[in-house]
Length: 239
Image 1 (spheres, helix red, strand yellow):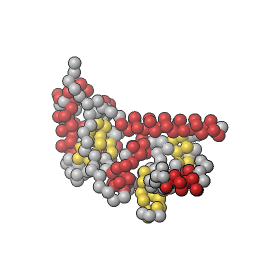
Image 2 (image 1 turned 30 degrees about the vertical axis):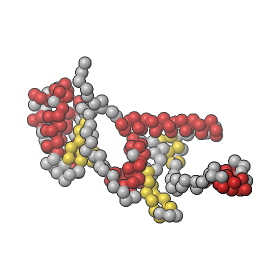
Image 3 (image 1 turned 30 degrees about the horizontal axis):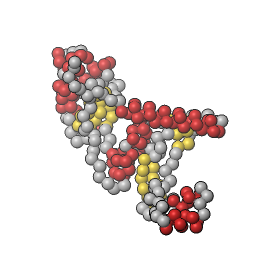
Image 4 (image 1 turned 60 degrees about the vertical axis):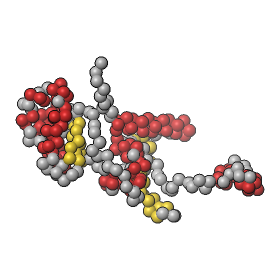
């Protein structure tokens, strides 16, 4: 029996797969109703934004949400490290990118370090390895590192917090972050749909209704006369 340990959960892949499955199911329903096939599209980025909509919506409209950029991860092929400017960087180093990553860090000494000689060694000494890499990344601003990793074809990116995502040009261009006008609150920012079907993306057009806002209209829709609705209201059946 091995001791308890965290399981590396590929959250972006899982969330993206769920969103894509929903998009496919929606396309099948549309085809059944209209006879027309649908080209559906989504992305890992859009799915992740959608999955964190409550926090992003809050921060985009003036509320404060704690940052999660330094949450611990349990995947042995990835790490998060803080640059000298306080920003965070994500680095992925699958087996064939180990030596290139060391070159990008100018830490070729790690390649010949007995603690990290093999994949099994690196896994056994994972915390020491992450410490060595993190201490090196901390010598430069986080934004200086991605270009260095790109030259060695090592996946890396700056880790965005919620305010950065709410302002991200890529998210806005893909309509993952959208704005709309509300009669009471003016211009509001919110998370859009991560799904496109035949090039068309769902749009947010208004806030959700207030409690009881649509009651009369819905009752009229199912055939209730205004007098009947008034009696229901007087009896306390509807508010």
